[in-house]
Length: 325
Picture 1: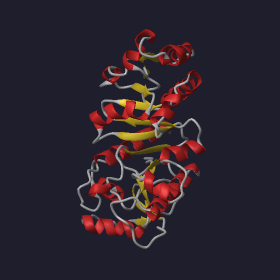
Picture 2: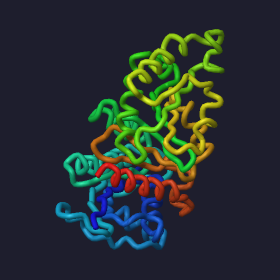
Picture 3: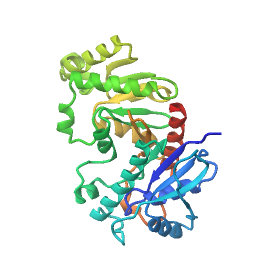
Picture 4: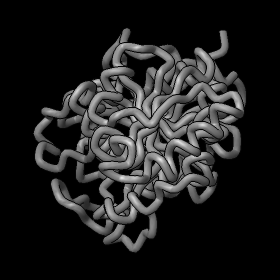
């Protein structure tokens, strides 16, 4: 039996990344059979495992050859001997990026089927002098057209723009940008289980502009892009009133809302599925998922982090790997 090879990164050492990774791996019976490869500092994993009273006797990852079930460690040394907990820190930002970069390099080289990333701090990355706002922005630099999407048992959302100031994000709602986004989203979904499905596009303004009375972007930018995409054979509709479109998509497998900016999509998504939601980057030659929460600095080190979103991120990575094979 062939099993997927899934890399997991520790995330920011000052947050809950190592905790939710270790708890997820200890949740026997909830994860699919796979070769799991942990990308992180062996000392940090051991320290976290002792605090949580969880096993961490992972064998070094040999790499290569057929994937075999088990948990292995790819030791990526942290640049600082001690970690700062519960706040953004430059050394932690550099460390979390090194873990992530090592896993992405392995995936790009064909050694991993999927990468599941622990949460990082955007502030820590900035303190470390890194130019990307997060995982997705780094991946977009390697694979233009990569899309941030979110998946839960009841709702699916993709974002035209994500980590941008709102004024800048609204300026990106233009016909050609939208059409390129719809095409990329359709192409990415077509390669997953269940095919491309249906895409619902919300309006930008209240009541989707009310025929131009409450804003013109629906008529000048969004509707023309939707109509062109539909003429190309893409299953898409809109613009729908943004305050009701998520109800239309709820509990409809195969339906995805193509939100126009970060909070338009993430407020309803996290209200519905925060504990079990998953962030997935579409448009890559490998699978990448992560929990839909951040570093949770406020509870780091307390042992109180909920691993359910990490568990679902691993499960979705396995499913996507199977549909891509």
